[in-house]
Image 1 (cartoon, helix red, strand yellow):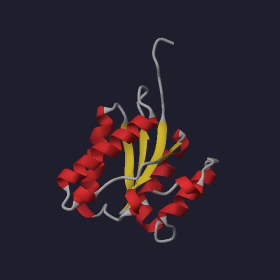
Image 2 (cartoon, rainbow, N blue to C red):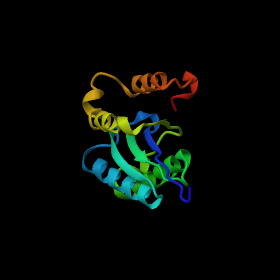
Image 3 (cartoon, helix red, strand yellow):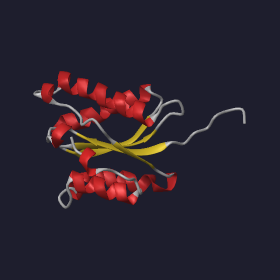
Image 4 (tube, rainbow, N blue to C red):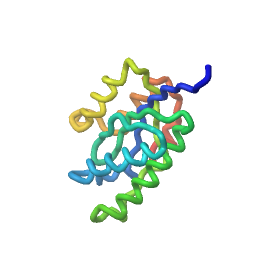
Length: 150
């Protein structure tokens, strides 16, 4: 084959440090737009972004030369700097250290997008911690509870 073709879809999410509820109102949408720009510069494509006041979910296509960890590190560091500069009270904002990311098949993109879009109503029934545990079990990912929360 004379070219490299890659479809690398991921559902990634991470929380604000201490799950502080800061992502609210108009600036949440601006944050998603800023993250879209970060990812575009990395040759990645943000398909969907959403979440609640204390965590963010991304559905993205990650470029063939980018690792998941590089993408998350850049998104978190650059978006945090953006919040510090552009949001009133944002100087106290930070993301948690870790993240979770799961591969997504093309056949599941619509379902994951719908899941991201329904986060606010979804979290009337389940907190972030329960959501993470459920997804880790669903994806058969082993974890140590001591290191999930910071």
